[in-house]
Length: 512
Image (cartoon, rainbow, N blue to C red; front, side, top):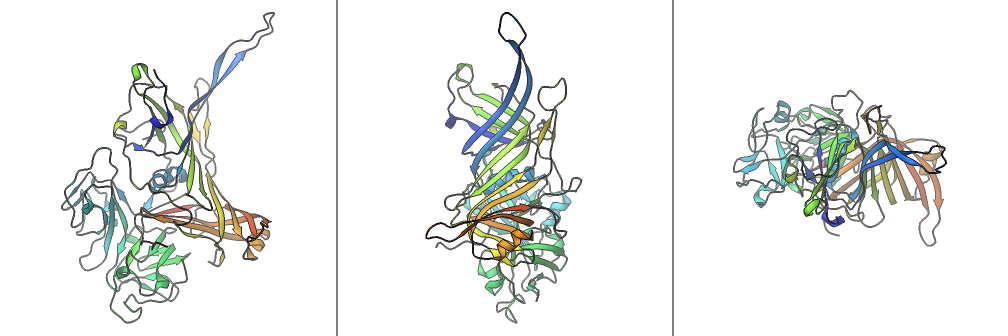
């Protein structure tokens, strides 16, 4: 046996089929933590301490066991997307994400499509078509934004796109082909007088767009955007009807547009709506509610006899605590805590498929000065309160706890309490209404969007209340307010506390 150094270890993760049980063919993913604060069990022992002339305690017994995994990492889209369903106890809806087993000249080879998946892949030769964004392939022809090139049916194993080359990804390579939006027929998408999106031919209920999801109105280039720049940007979908998307929380008030090159009476434009997957917390029993158990692998070279690698497995973990920190300058970071059933002793034997853990994907960090596209507190009627933040820390807690029984060392069950979502922030004192909202306990909302070359993610807390309100007066600077935001589920239109929307691709941001 030898010494294990921090830089030599690897932490991998997979989803379990049920709490503590791996699926037959688990799909492992390699993590990139900055620090691992805890991995493994904490054993409690109780010694004997009898009254005795020996004046000495006696050997005790093992009385309790707790298992946990805690780590801190840079915020990346890959890390967020992998774990967010676990933290929000909900399956992703919206745009599907596929991991192709191959690229061919006819498109991407994927597992057999369900009826629901096939229905969200829209192809009309002279009308709307689904946008696909792919990444991770060696051949550049297989990466980037593409348009579905033919219709698909349930049971099919090909997502058809034009211009691909033959390629089979390596076992450890993470590739993805994601629904990135929809391209409507020329002139079909319009903006009505209320700032909502309407269509005649496209049925929005077939696209996968879900009420509460944040979308981007307009494509990656001006060719597929509305004429008026005021009609380009992020917005939250309030309701989805066949011919109408009712919107809220727009980047700015949208204005009426008939979907032409002049905004009124010009050449019809094929406008894109960009969106991806969407995750939000839901009620227990909801069709989208799910409990996602994770298993972590700690790979420690040189740990075992003869210099062999040791493998430890933290089994049966539920996502408990997530914290995202956005400082004034630097990069956004996240800490994650998991509560588990147990952690195995180090062994020479590795779990099924762990040797094929996939690495890579969307791993670019988010700079807090350059990659925050939107950050604001708003009244529920969209009146802006403040956008000038000095720091933001978002925390989500599921209050997960293990339940123990006699004759079982460590928890036998895991229980989740109420979800609690809070934000601590410091803002510039530029609007007296902030103080009024705090004092009178008014309901407000908070949202922010992060974007980089890998795509984007939008966090939306539809309803909550501001607290604190103490001010600071630093010399030669703006007056500051220290305030908190406590999210609550009190919005009948949305019905969730926290929603997270992902974007496989967004329009590029010009370099400042």
